Image (cartoon, rainbow, N blue to C red; front, side, top):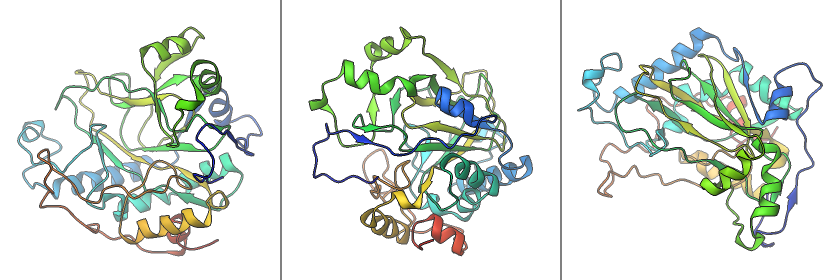
Length: 330
């Protein structure tokens, strides 16, 4: 299913896949609404372990930081964070706890059920630690992570949830039911000549009115530590910010899995190169394999002197990990 630049971005690429769904579980909602929550994919105890490891990683940049004491947050020297509250530099993507979480049996089982195979590869995706009331909340940025030309099921994204996510807390926001309508929107409301290759498309207020007129409404997904949030890349979504009432430190790991057979030889070669340098990629595990900037840059554009080219705690390179990384064949 990997694509090349031999065709223009307006040429449609159909997927031969559908969600493997015998009926009667969370896949019903994933298929009907474009998102779902897999309850208890990992135990609450393991979720707390991964969250604490994430906090330890954050504290490694400033020992004065105390996650339990908000008075230490304001002056803490945090590592570089994206405007979406994610960390993708400093080789955090390949920290041992990140790889341990990606290999949790309940997480792997959920994606195996979606795709109908356990021969999976995983994205080299980021960590989100959002401290509430530390900065102004960002306005919604509704988007999909699938190019207009790609039709059908191409990518299922995931969040390994490590913190409580209630109505006032940070969590994934989705446009409920938008996955089933987004292709119609592209066909009727956009010019194919404007379509781009990249698997990312933002929607403005006028676009959103089109969906709202068809009954699509925003939902902030609620989840508990250990739950796995899944969504179709055609589902309009964004990262929902915590309100001023929240005191929860949102902690999540982004992880998407796809059948290894979907990745081209070229994609796997590029994925292996990214893995060797402890790099990060997009949400896509099998396509769009492009190394993100390895340099953590401060607000003035200079490289953070604390930049890291390898993780603090290196992962154990087991057969399972190397297969999930796309480095070793099944």
